[in-house]
Image 1 (cartoon, rainbow, N blue to C red):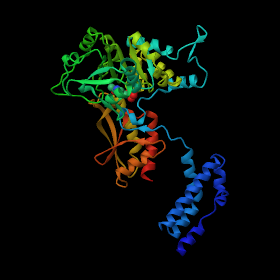
Image 2 (image 1 turned 30 degrees about the vertical axis):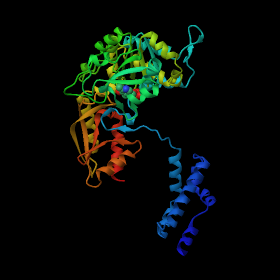
Image 3 (image 1 turned 120 degrees about the horizontal axis):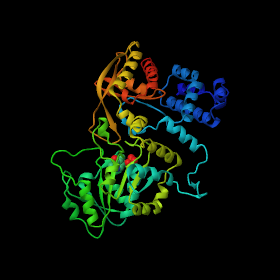
Image 4 (image 1 turned 90 degrees about the vertical axis):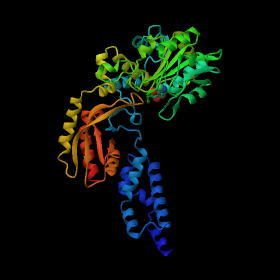
Length: 467
Ligand SMILES: *Cc1c(COP(=O)(O)O)cnc(C)c1O
C-alpha cells in the first residue's frame, strides 16, 4: 500500500506536463484540447497500472522520462486522418476492402477542378436556367450502352432498391432460386426485396430453373421478372437457367417488365483481352431487357455509383421517386463517372487508361519487369530471402470468381522475424503495405503494384525487419 502511494506521488501534474518543452512545441500544430485529452489518458493508464500492481518503479521512471513522446504520439494519432492510401500487394485488382477501383490521376485532377470551383451541376448553360444533375451523364451512358435512358445513384445496392421500390412496391417479383445472391455480406437479394416493399417469389430450384417456373408463377400481382447475375459464385454441374432472351419473351408476352441486376457493369468484351467472357451491359440492352443496373466501381473502373439504364418511361418513374433524392450522388462522383465513361468512346484507349482494366489485362512481361526491379532492390537486404515466383491474381469485387490470372510475385522469408510479424509491420508502415501469407512466406503480387511504389516497399521491408 505504502508502495502504491509512493508511485502515485511520482506522477507529474497536468500543468507541469503542459509546460514541458516538447509539449509546448507540439502545441503549435496540435490543438490544446487534444493534448489535454492525451495527457489525461496517459495519467489514467498509469494510475490504473499502479492500482492493478502492473507497474514497478523502474518502469514508471521510464514512462515518465518518455512522457512527452508518449503524449505527442497519442495526440498525433487523434489528429491524423484515418482513411489513407495503402499499397495493394494482394494482386486482387478490385479489392473491396482496399477501395475497389482506382481512378486515374488525370481524371482526379479534373474532378478537383470541378469540385473546388463552382460548376454547372444543376444549371443549364444554354438556356440559362435550372438544369438536372443527371443530364450531363445521361447522354454518354446511353451512347455507350445503347439504352434509351439512364439514371445514376449512390451504388448498385441502392439502384436495385430504387428499381424494386418504384416498379414493384406492394407487388410480386419473380426471381430464380439460383440467383438469390449475397454480395459482400450486406447486399442480399431477399433483404433488399423486403426493404423495397416488394414481395419475393422465388421459383425453380438452386441448380435448375425452367421457363415454366416463371410462367406458372405469373399472376395479376406480378410486377417484375428479375434476373440477378450470380457475380461471385458459379453453379456448375447439373444446371439450367433461363437465358435473357427467353425471359424477355416471357415477360413481354405477359406485359411484365424484365429487370436485370448485372452486378459488375462490364462495358467491353473482356474475352478479347484474355479474360473469361462476362456478360456486357450492351448485350443485355440488345436482348430487350427493360431495366439493367450495375456498379460504377467494379469492372467499369470508375467511382462508387449505381447506374440504371433502360426504357425511358420506366426510368422516368424512378426519377420521380422520392428515394432518388435520398440516393443522389455528389458532383465528384458525377464528374469522375462522366470522365471514366468518356474513356470508353475509344475501347483500345479505355483498356489502357482505366486502371482496373489496365491491371487486369497487364502483359505478364510488364509484371515480370516490376518483379525484377523489386527483386534487385530487395536482394541486398540482409536477413531476408526473396524470390520471384509464379502465382495467380484475382479479379475481386465479386466478379469472375473462378478467374485465375497468371502473375509474378515476390516471396519474402526471414529467419529473424516471424512471417506474421513481418506482415503486421508492413501493414502498419506508412503508407501501409498489404501482402498475403502462404506457406510461411509473405507474398507481394506485382500486378497491383505501381512502378513508383517499388521504392516504398523496399523502405517498408527494411523498416519492418529492423523494428
Ligand atoms: C456488387 C453487386 C451488387 C452491389 O453493388 P454495390 O455497387 O456494391 O452496391 C449488387 N448486385 C450484384 C449482382 C453485384 O455483383
